[in-house]
Length: 359
Ligand code: NAD
Ligand code: ZN
Image 1 (cartoon, rainbow, N blue to C red):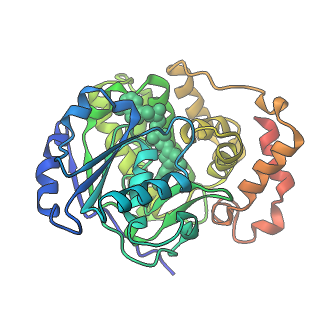
Image 2 (cartoon, rainbow, N blue to C red):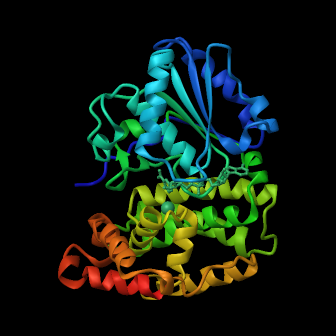
């Protein structure tokens, strides 16, 4: 069976495109109970961008703190309960922030029409009813969450996405100017999420010409942004990074991530490491999976004076390593891609623990 992939309905791209949000939302405002909900990264509270959000009196604006934890099922459930109790079903949800905020917006758009906790829907095609109109406005680029079919949430048991056709944004607004305030290290880690998506997509079973076409473009943009003569955090590079993130996401959608993301999920779930950072920590040590790309990655780390920790596993107890390996082992789709459909015959939890001990 081939993936029947749902794409974003509409995309506006270019500097200043943020200013078009009001006009784009206008015809949607009569839907459901006639108000919009803006989910905005707390970083922007009190900042200039907050004043530019085209919220009307009837709308709700939430500044969400995503710094302590990656998005959780509780966080989404609580927002949903509050919105439904206060005002009813929104006409639309607009997420303004990085991958974390975009995932919250995507999940929320499904949860306002589906009963019970979002925990019930972590997995593929478990969502029962269509969600509502939703828009993604990335302010840090690389995750591809603006185009992916999944809204990744951490629940009590698993870190797993709510994945179905209805998860995908109806509208993406890709304004590279919004990236200008991202801290240098974060700009690097999230950008590397894109680079790693493309490398993982091409290093396994599910790779194909569709994935390659997008992945090659995204990789060549990443190379200009992070290694080229004009490398660095400039508007010109942010214009490229916004598209690299989108294309990396599209490459991945038609392939799969592998060993690096499996290890990264363990680091995030058990130790709370942020996604982009966790990927970098793992990728650095996975030469048998990714070959020359690991050397290229190291040269990007060096060029941007990013420090990645060494020897951290020495501080982990056997129990911690065990828990992380348990999380990583339970991502069969990633191991199918990385090792093959018979991976269980070749690959054990003990092998995964060995990889963690390298970090
Ligand atoms: P993020 O959303 O977690 O944000 C990282 C930091 O950047 C935060 O401190 C935030 O406040 C800050 N920030 C955001 N925009 C800023 C700006 N313009 N200026 C200054 N600071 C800004 O970062 P991320 O790496 O984009 O997202 C990671 C999340 O995305 C993880 O939760 C991960 O699970 C998820 N993810 C989802 C998908 C998907 O397909 N749905 C894919 C990859 C990752
Ligand atoms: Zn990722």
